[in-house]
Image (cartoon, rainbow, N blue to C red):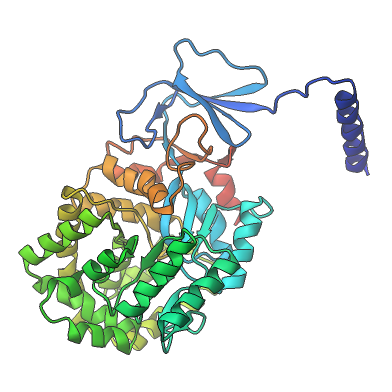
Length: 454
Ligand SMILES: [Zn+2]
């Protein structure tokens, strides 16, 4: 009742203000003062920064020297802290329970790459309108696959006409991008890319039947999991494509086992070809790494898994996944042997000017939404990238991948999505986990209070 009354009074007052032509007071802002700013441009950090945020946007960026607090702005002292742009997980399968996990771990944007199309787009609408708190969601809706589709909720296509129709259905549903899956062949891929271009939508792929260089020449915008790279390196990829056609796990196993035997000059050639085409790679090293260590019992008892609700862990059913995959004790060392080759390939790709974005594949088995983004950052540094370049992969490159310039950078006019850290991430990438507060859409949240609420 009191609420209703005060709402009525506020409405009357604003109506009165409008009637007499007074300007309404500007909405309250926040000034984040004293932290070291790593703005996402790749330039040097800015010490003793003063950042003003209002209406969910960055209003100004400067230093404390000469800074005067604007009217209706509250100062937040962040001396001894570091600020980075909100992180982007560019390969996610979003579930409702995961939303607070993303925010608590500083992930303020996710690129969703397959789900049940109606429910994920409904969730995206609720979150992006602010009815449900969570990271910004960009979604592919459901992926397009060849027939029979690997997953029942994918859109299947066996002719170019079907492939175009599948794109049209997704466009009508309102997706942000198109994802193709392992059973898409070159003819279908060309049709998907051509139809998506009509609607100005980007196409990404978890490739199986088409190798990475062919897909890049066809005009694919990005490639997930480094898929199609071994297939582009070998003279005869028929055994790999046959394995991909049998199913996801058969394809993954053959693909992962092939890396260690790839020729260095072939890897160099493929890295250059992809970089020249501007194809963005989302390597999801954390997925490769996780599958390669499933013979370690510690994987299943990791204390971090407490962040995943028991029902979701039951759905994961890791022993059953291993059974379905048919993995045996000798597969894991072979998967681990792939990792240094993948790292070397990424270094070559980056040296040739290629762009890498961080993605995780959470919330698939053992990949914790939000937390796994930090594991991916650590794996990129382990692969030989600087903390600065790893952070760019998680911020600016994710924005470029999505084709948006409002996120991934802290500058006037950009979205007020950022993370406040208590330790310097450029000194040690593990410090991205030292999260003090997270700002999403201009609202400053305490990481601890988000955790308490899930
Ligand atoms: Zn995925």
